[in-house]
Length: 340
Image (cartoon, rainbow, N blue to C red; front, side, top):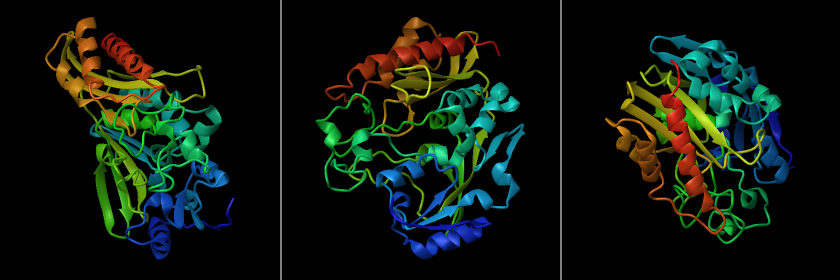
């Protein structure tokens, strides 16, 4: 691991000022000399592997603002402080009752130990687990722009079939983000250029020709909160995760589903897919196909077909298309049958 300077700022403005002094406006957060850390469950791994080599780490756990560690529930929605731990949010009574898809997505992620350490903001910013990204001897455009993508012709069973490009097929492996994008969440960020709100759907960037540019954040911006609005579909929601083993494994395919129903007719549907895309993936074509329809096996199957109509499989991951469709159909029908 490369030597680094470790600092513990006590307020966001100080953290931003330090980061700004060691980065430029054009630096990407993942490649900046100064990087923020909270739980450290993702960044520490990549520092040990030599994938990330920041010269300075800014530990945010000493920030004094109490709102960063609070979960506030109102009639308008729910607000998570950025430093709330995954385990705390998963076990929160109001989260489980009002936003079950969020509780599910957190409960099914990682291990209990990691959930007790990892922050919510850090979780949504986690980087891919692509083995060609993690192993520095392989070519990887995300790690070393312009070097190529070894996964294209390598063993790509875990890789994405949606949102891919000729430069990158790495999967976004998070679970919590699928719930957030399905529920129209908003990110609050603070940086040297002030405070701004970012629709969660705009936070992550598809790889295109610049897979190293992973989010819309600047290098000196800190996520301070995540807000989820109170909507009619929030209570009738769930997250279904299919993986090789029952625990501590990333999704091969997953679905976050939220429904507003009139009997069995869909007023509104919110669908996100995990394990199959390069970014948290909102399946808008599937949502549109369900609107005004009776939700049954046939309409759920049609929605699944729409969700994967643009899929681009590689040699070893073509199975994800059928698996993803079956996962979505099951999630839709289980959500329809929920008692709320």
